[in-house]
Image (cartoon, rainbow, N blue to C red):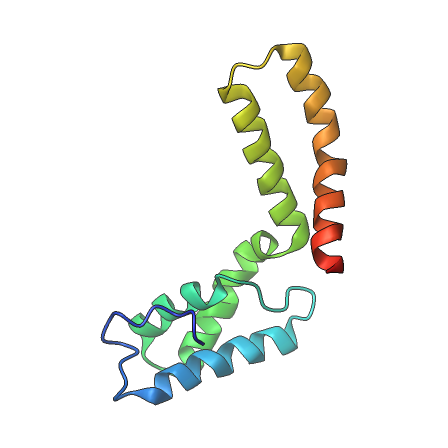
Length: 122
């Protein structure tokens, strides 16, 4: 898990089994939840749980339970909804007229889908 923050002492070099736990839990979750799989950021969520639980099995169940409440945020639909909300916020923040916001609001879903499709394609 090269992107996991290792500045803290929990994932220090003298405790390599903890990085193995992190990897094993993420792989197990992805295998048993293929509709979600793995998404960037899950390792950050899990690393905090591991640091508190310090037990592989307990951390897995805690992670699995927590993700059941936020899993949509790691799925395409949830990410697209968040991007749409950000787009609307930006449009409203730059004082675009109401009629322009309505027009752009209608265009955002297809633009985001097109962008997402293009990214996934490459």
